Length: 251
Image (cartoon, rainbow, N blue to C red):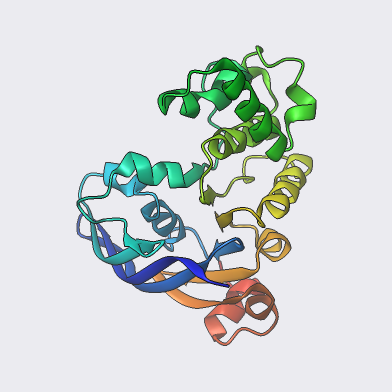
C-alpha cells in the first residue's frame, strides 16, 4: 500500500498558540484513515491542512512539509483551487447550497467550465449513485436541497464532493450531527468508497473508527501519540495514553 499524503515535521500555529507539534504521518492511498482524540487535540487542524483550509485563518503559520502525490502543497507555485479539486472536504454539519438537488451537485462542474447538458446530467447522476442517494432523489432533482433530511443532505454534500473526481476525501466528523440510521448509511457509504478514494476521517466516535477505518491515528495535546492498524490501536496499543483513551479512562 503506497502513501498518498506525507506529513513531515509539521508544527502549526494559530497566532502564538502551537496547535500541532512535530507531526509525522503518512496516509495510505485508497484506504480509510481515522483521526481520533479528545476535543482540541489537533486532529481537525491537521485535516484542514491537507486542503489548505487553514489558509483562511488569520495568524495561521505552518512549519514543516506536507506532500500529496510527492508534491509540496504549500509551495508557492501550487494553485489552491486545483489542490481542492484533488482533495475534497465534507464538513461536520451538512452544508448544501440553497439551490436544487441537481444544482448542488452540478455546481463544481459548472465552475470548472462544464456546459454540455448531457455531460452534466451524466456526471450528476453518477455522483448521486456513488453517494447512495440517486434512488431517493432521482424523481425530485429540481427540489430544494434544503428540504432533504439531515442524512440525505450529508450524502448530497458527499455527492457534490465526488462530482469533481477528487483523489482524496477529507471528512470532519461527517456523522456527528446525524441520527443513528443516517450515521449507519454514511458509514456504509464510506466502506463502499474506500476502494476508489483515499479517505481521512476525523471522528469522536471510536466505534465508528473501528467500523470504517484500516488505520487509526491517536492525537493528544497537539501531538501524534500513536499511528497503526486500527485493530492494533484498539486491541493492543503500544502507548499507555492510547490504551487509556480507547478504553474510556479519559477523554
